[in-house]
Picture 1 (tube, rainbow, N blue to C red):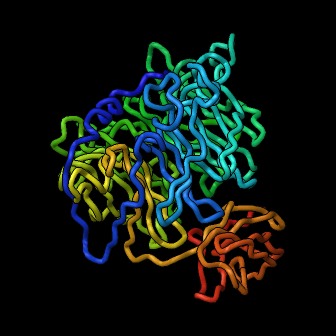
Picture 2 (picture 1 turned 90 degrees about the vertical axis):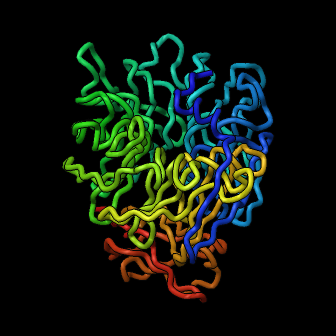
Length: 491
């Protein structure tokens, strides 16, 4: 199988360490599920809320099939909000050591407009190159491999080792990155829902370095301007990572090179993607660098404008956590939420809130229960469910020390989410929420729309004629629910 990066190997060794946790008042933290290995282990990726109201995710190892993975090649799972977990698929299920269906998923899933979930694996595949896959899986667990990287004989010009999650763009296609390949430094690609892949950009390295970056690990984000933004872990002017912008056709611009300040006070080696605020600025994390006493820096939270002006909002000190590997998410109150993978009150990671101006609050420090029963070492981003609560995973700890799924309530109310968040008039839209049965009205920035209530968690509608950019509102028997982000009506 593909080699695991050094920090992940070290983490797998240390993940069984015990510690304690602290919660602030007016919060409710709940461990929903503890993995036992047979149902998966070491969940590293963020969860996603499905239109059926359940959460879906992946585990890096574990599952029913050992194959070439010595303990399982990873899984796809579904979990209810009450904590009932169903293993939908165990990778390497076709037998042998080749794992032609993929292995060791490090990325989360994205639900497509067709109701299926799409994801990547950095290893396995049918080409014999062990270079990874793009797959589709139904909510009931039927998996289809859409693409296997590095077809034999092409020198991996299409890339290999995809680590980041996919994003479905407004054109209906999926966009993602490979961490290696092309010329050895990674690629940006587009893939249709039926599996036709186009390499849009190849990161270029030479004896003079990798000026546009190398090793893109985080997910792309399609911003309000229609372009994609992302990060590379290495490369750039100082060799320690970049932030970039690319058009849908693959015209790339490097916006920022990390470690441009003395001692890498601005952070280094970003592994996660970005989040965009309503103002149009982007927010993200670096797991290393910053002003701190940690050997390599405890990591940072930063803000960057679309033109590339970066501001470091927070340098972690260790006491407030260290190693933020996952993306930030923008919650319905306008603040950003994230996790650190270690340190904190008891050296096992934290959940934090940070305002757009940089005021940080530690909301939870892992391991408050004996043996880290509440989890240890979160590596992934959180997701805010439409019920208002946050859900996430830890890569270690729990009752069986293989990781957990948890929820955290901080008092935020329910909302609705449109999928997609931008479309032209007449296009079909899914509205995901909670307790939607009995809804009497759907409006797009005040313009009424016809709709059908499919279930308590799903309304189907179309963008009405005359609609303008703004929030979507749904009137239900329990009250009026507003979309978490403004819906953009495209020309």
